Image (cartoon, rainbow, N blue to C red; front, side, top):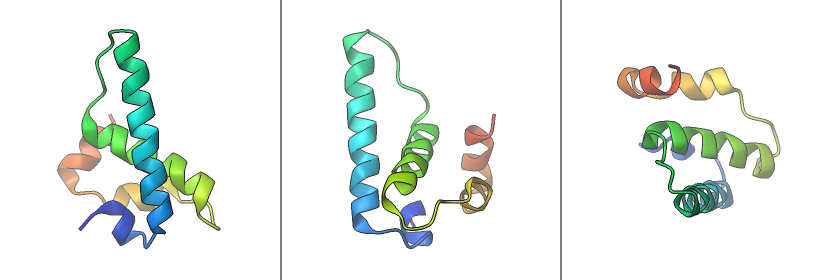
Length: 77
């Protein structure tokens, strides 16, 4: 199950997160930089989108707890 579904976020929050990732990767390409690990990028983008779109601010710790152990390890390095 996807993280935004587990958190019961609006579809617009997911779309905003995708837009954030897209714009970030485009900016990295302009400067010939490598993108960070995809789980980290997706999680951060969803947190930013939730801050913008959701009526209540997200709890970073609660969101990270929903990730699998392997993904949580990557994100919290």
